Amino acid sequence: MGTAVDTGIDHPFRCPDCGHRLYWDDLDYGSLLVCGNPQCPNVAMPIPVWRAQEHRVGRGEDTPPPGAGLPRPVMRGLPVPYVTPVSDGRPWWRLTHGPRILECQNSWCCQVCGLPLPERAWVVLSGHGIVSDSALHQECLVIALAHCPHLTANAQDLRYAAISRTDLLVGHNQPPTTQALWREPWSVLPNTPTYDRPPAGEPDQDGSGAEPTPGS
Ligand SMILES: [Zn+2]
Ligand SMILES: [Zn+2]
Image 1 (cartoon, rainbow, N blue to C red):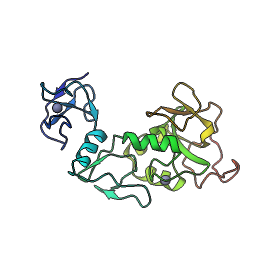
Image 2 (image 1 turned 135 degrees about the vertical axis):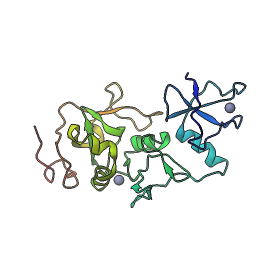
Image 3 (image 1 turned 180 degrees about the vertical axis):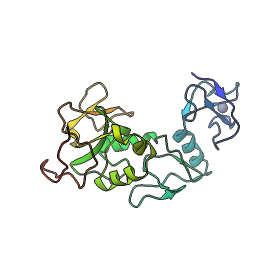
Image 4 (image 1 turned 120 degrees about the horizontal axis):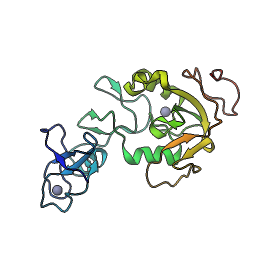
């Protein structure tokens, strides 16, 4: 459990139980929120931004984040991925929407557009770990590489792989499930071919051709 940090109002979130304004958790500033009311039964329970926003939507104070599909809506000059929480038209770029990332994992959907992926799809790798723990369409990878500050800032450390769901390792080296209850870290099998530059086209669904030559 963290301690509430009062840094002034930089978000619209209020406690779903007592209505007191929420504060950033000092252990996870900018991500988790805690109730500032010491009398509240919820005081020791940090909640993520997406959850606090769901309460606002439930109270009719805002609308849900943009749904699945392309083109992505543009907010503050950038396309907003399906898994990004949004409040009052503000995308929370560094954060992810819990149920949506879980949906992408369980249903093999794209983190950028939210639509179903083909048999084989692209993942961005940092080491063996999959960035954002979810996969993308080729078109959506191009969008992400053009606009996502995290990807452009770390481009020299990233690699790319075209994988099927069966090529995944989930959590502590488990095969993937379609019924996970929370987001699991995704990685790829150690012998998965990877590429040192972004792909030029969709991976062939039979696993051959139409991909960049594997890098060293
Ligand atoms: Zn409260
Ligand atoms: Zn997509």
